[in-house]
Image (tube, rainbow, N blue to C red; front, side, top):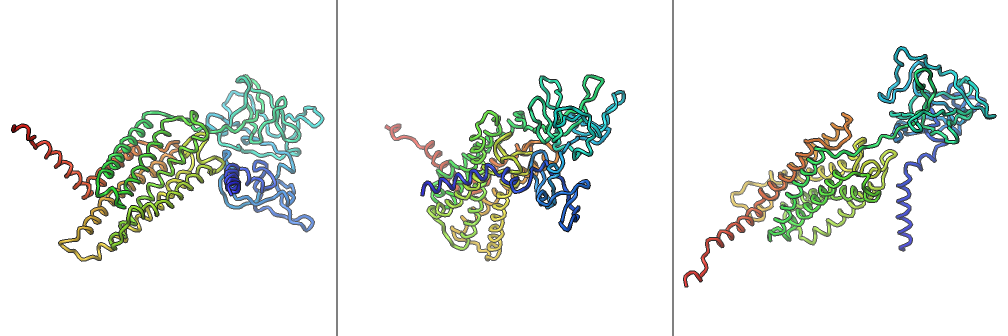
Length: 494
């Protein structure tokens, strides 16, 4: 049995770790060797055949693709036909149209400034033939020419800061002294000295996510610390309050506080530590735990809203019932964080690599964090509306039962805190979307920082300041202290 479970686990891990590669095996060739031929069917000898630049493409080299690859990342797209044109005729990739060259600084094609030598034409290039001889060859008849950049950012490959001479071979490969250039390239003329142009292949430059630890990051960490201290105070008060200690509501609030303390602490740790200084395992485990605690905290709030609704109908939950219902939720949260930790978003792992948290260059945080949080908020909102409907239907009685008044007070204090929490996270979502569209590679701005601190103050205000039972408990402590201060020991009368 144990061996079977181990095999299943290894199978799941291998599936997720190679998810970006298995998809390619379903297609006749690599994406870089294809061209879009949608809408170009024809017929030769009664068989359906496709054409690309008047060249017939055999049907076994044509496939339906539901994605494109941009900047090395697989992006879903409408289904379309692509043909392995580089299998029919060797491909040569040129970055820019005739008369232009690629500018690595602006990442755009541009016309060279006046006073420079005339650019070489695209029609001819020096090619090494199969017999080893070099010849200026017309590209059109021998090659399939693609004018495009495979990535947004292209850069030349140099040796000791100097350009090397790369040779284009008759079979379409580009090499230098036995080193074969990647297929993800494009040729552009580059000026050698101030007199001659040379065709140089440019390679895709990976866009590294640079770690930044500035004033904004420290402010965010400090604000998270303020929120952690506030949550710790809430936890201690609910532990000390005998009326809350073993009640369903009290246990739920304590479990929520622990999740928030651990989640925010890990989030602050990841913010202040460079991913390059963390191991690959730590760069997956720590964010997975952070995700688990944050998502779990919202489902505890949903759980509390469900319990408050049932309380108005006279249903009483015990401490044991809390753990019986809460345990499956914990298991689901653990499973979700484990799944995300081994998942790919596009061609990249969700956690690991350039960043040990969600990559701000894509929408992975929306899918894996904010989407489940939104579902939890929707569940809580549903039970909040049902509770309001029930309360509105009840007649107003001047003298309510003690149980009902306690539950209504918990209901009001809890929902004040929930609204504050929802506002804080709504600011987080809007800030991320704002930064994303501004192409600012960060989840943070000062609104996120200050809202994080506000979240802690909101917990103190709503869960302690507005809770009747907690206030009564604190008044009793205050009265006992006053009694002790005003008492006089009997020994003073002797």
